Image 1 (cartoon, rainbow over the protein chains, first blue to last red):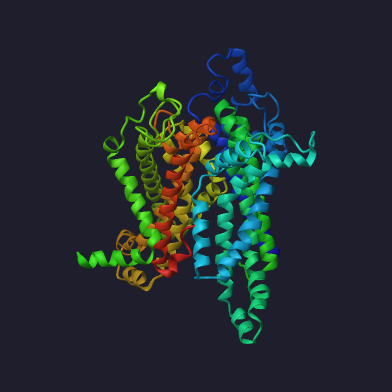
Image 2: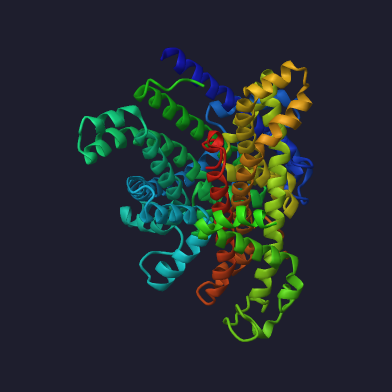
Length: 315
Length: 283
C-alpha cells in the first residue's frame, strides 16, 4: 500500500508539473507580443515596460517559468490585467458560486442517476431498461445551454418560480434562500452528467452481477432482493462513487457554459470574459487551479478505492 | 445485392430507433448537399419588416430578429454541422491512430506519448478547447482543431489499448517471426482489425463534436457570427426567447437529434463489435 501511495502520488505530481508547463507556455504561444495583445494598440511605452517588467518577460523563458511556478506554489498567481487585482482574488470571488453550483448539481446527479441506473439494471432487457437507457442517451445528446434556456423560458419567464439569472451570495441579504438562484442552472448542468452516472451505475451493477460470489449467494438460496442489496449494490456503488470525484471536477469546467447562460458570477464565466478581455493571467490561473483540483480529486479517489478494494492494482 | 441488403436490413428492423437515427442523418446530409434548393430564402437575407414572425405562411419556421428565414438557416446549418463533425473525426483519427499504434509498437516511445496524452487529459475538455481558441483565434477551422484535440486524447488511448491486444495475437507473433516488418504488421494485421472499434469511436466523436461546437458558438468563440450554424442561431436568439420561442426550438432540436442519432448508430455498431474490444470504446 505504501509503495502504491508513493507511486500514484508521484505520477500525479509529474502530471501537474507537465500541465503547469503547458499552461505557462500558453501565453507564449499566442501570436504577437503578449504585452501588446493584452494592453491593446493604444498602450503607452511606459505601460508596456511596466507590464513587461511585472510579468518578468525580459528574463529567459526557463527563469520565467520557475518564477511563475514558484509564485504559484506560494499562492500568487499574478495580477489580473483587467481588474488590476491579484488573480487569486478574482478566483476567490467566483469560487462560492461555482462550488455551490457544482455541489447542488451533484445532488441532482446522485438523486437521479444512481436509483434510475439501479432500476435499469434490475430490469435488464425489459422495456423499462430500454426506455431508461434511451432516456440516458437522449440526455447525453442535449446541449446544457439549450436546456438552460428552456428552463428559463418555462420556470423563470413563464411560471415565475425561480429567478432567471444572477446569484447573490448566501452570506449577503437573503441568506440560504439565495440558493434558489442556482436551482435552474444546476438542473441544466446535471442533465448530461446524470445520464453518464445512470449508464455507469447500470453497467457496474451488471458487471458485479456476473461475479462468482453473486452466483454463490444465489445458490445458497439467499432471497433475490437481499442478493441485489447486499452483494451487488454495495460493490457496484464503489465504482460509481469513484466516478463522483471525476464528475465533480468536470462540472467546474462544464459550468463555463451554464454560468454564461444564467449570468452567474462564477469562475467559469470569469474565464469566458477573461478570454474576451485578453486577461491572460486570469485564464492561466483558473486553468491551473482546475487542473490541480482534478488531479487531487482523482488521486484521492484512486487511493481510497485501493483502500476499499485491495484487488485494485496499479496498471 | 440482395445479400448486402439483407445483412443491413435485418439489424435495422430489429432496432427501429437506430433506423430512424440513420434516416435523420441522411436528411442532414441532404440538407447540407442541397441547401440552395431546399431553403426557400438565402440564409442571410435580411428583411426588417418581417422580423420575429411566428412560424407559418411563407416562413415555415418563422423569422429571427433580422427577418431572416429560420427554416432556411436551419437547412444551411446542416453544412457546418457536417463540416465540424467530419473535420473533428478526421483530425482525431489522423492524430490519435498513429500516436496509439506507435505507442503500442514501441513501448519506450509509448511511455512518453501516453504520458503526454495523460497530461492533456488532465485539462477539463472545454477549457482545453477554449485555451486553444485563444492561441489560434476564432474560426471554423480552429474550432475543429480545438475540439479535435480533445478527442485526439481519447482516440489515442483506445487505439493504444486495442493495438496492444492485437500485437499479442498469435497471428501477429507468427507474422513477426516470419520476418514481417512493422509497416507490414500495422497495415496488414493491426489496422484492418481495428476498423470496427474506430467506426464506433468515430460516431461518438462526431456526436460530441456537435455539442462541443454548439457550446463554442454559444460562448461567441466558435464559428463567426455571419455563418449560419445551429449554435450561432441559439446564441443570437437568446435575448428574444420570451417573444419568439420558435427561434430556440428548431436549431436546438437539430443539434439534439443529430447527436442522438449518432449516439444510436455508435451504440448499434458497438453491439455488433468484437466483444473483446467492446468495453474499451465509447463513454
